[in-house]
Amino acid sequence: MAELSTVARPYAEALFAVAKQDKAGLSAWAEQVQQLADIAAIEDVRVAMADPRLEDAQRTSIFLGLVKPEASAAMQSFVTLLVANDRLTLLPFVAEQFHALKDEAEGDRIKKRRTIRKIREEGENKEGGREKGK
Image (cartoon, helix red, strand yellow):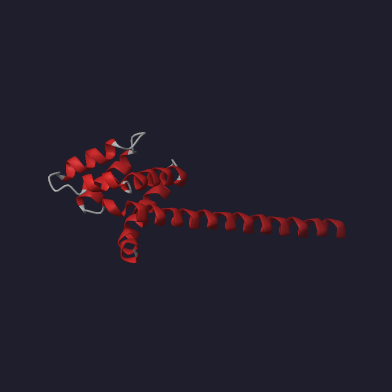
């Protein structure tokens, strides 16, 4: 399992980098990547995607046909990339790591907001103390 997580990490990081720049927001991307991962984890889907008679374009079309509502253009491109690299089975690991990156980024934002609030409060307290001292 650790090996699959290692292989999935660059895909998760690349997806996260794109998601951070998208106005849809990380939560929307997290939902989409989780839906793709859930579909990829279905045994019948895994078997179908491994069928040697299918070409990459067919695999991509079949897989994306299972996604409701339709995946965003960026996610469709991501699935196409995974299929071309024979990495579609990594989706559950990609989703797990994407969620970890999202949680980490959101945790950092919360910490920054708390720090800014604390600095402002301290500044207001100092100014309030000066006024009282006058």
